[in-house]
Length: 424
Ligand SMILES: [Zn+2]
Picture: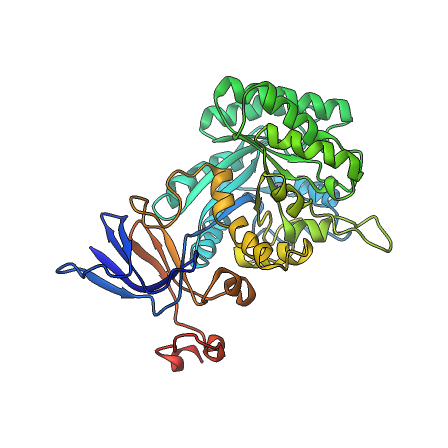
């Protein structure tokens, strides 16, 4: 039995005691007695948060930066071409090593669940095999969900649909797609139909890269919503990126949002990547390119933020820090109201958990005891400071720990850091 004392929760409750038994939260209250023999863990007033969740990542490409060369134009299309050059050179061992290294980074940052796309446009399905192996290896400490992603287009790339089905047979969890990369708008729409019908047939969720362009006339999310609604897939379908919405006509968006809501679509923005890849063909003013996050949220649509890339053909930076993602999303979407900032914290925790369909997520009685102690007093402060992770817990066990940092010492009203010398 383990008792966490003096924790602040993300809903603002302070001085909470959290009892953990058999890997689950057993009770949460300010006045819980200390059970005999219980181990004590003092949260020192810091923020006890549910773990971070990443709703959109590419673990097969991560940490491959510079292989075989760098992306000079900085565009999505050069990134896809570059990945195509790298693919024949991939080995399973290198894929596994890079993915495991990234999972270590993630856990240290309190990121305990990741939905990763895995490219299936490769006869050998090397990356699929590698990431299925990684999914099992990391299971004790990280939930990895895999999406069968036809990077080169399920219709445009020969054999892609068969490869995708093979990947599903091997145990990949979700059906992906990339309609804006098919040869024509009509082919894109056809790919959405085929993939949604496959999902309905197999009882699987869908998560498509959708309208990832600056083209104001890209209409694939409309088609995705149509088929989700037609096939009764409400709550199981996610549109990722949706960057064209940034450039769409306002009247059209006013029609589109209720259709997405009716279809129970989840939306995932990838702020770090959208702000760097989009608008590359503009002179000035340059479009930001991220989808309409506050408007989607106001329409009642669940919106998550993904990291998308870390040190790969599309993005040279990143560290697995979902607070960096939240901070960028907040800035790009100008969500600086108190509610807006708080919503950005939810976008990397609760909302992403909904996208992944994680049962029993969050700090609640009966849920698995997964949490992270952030050196901050509130979710907004956690974003502002990109708060230090003091410890990370999975199923009631601390699996990562690091000493407090000195930067928080000057915060008004914050508890004192016990061992400030360790922070210098
Ligand atoms: Zn992506």
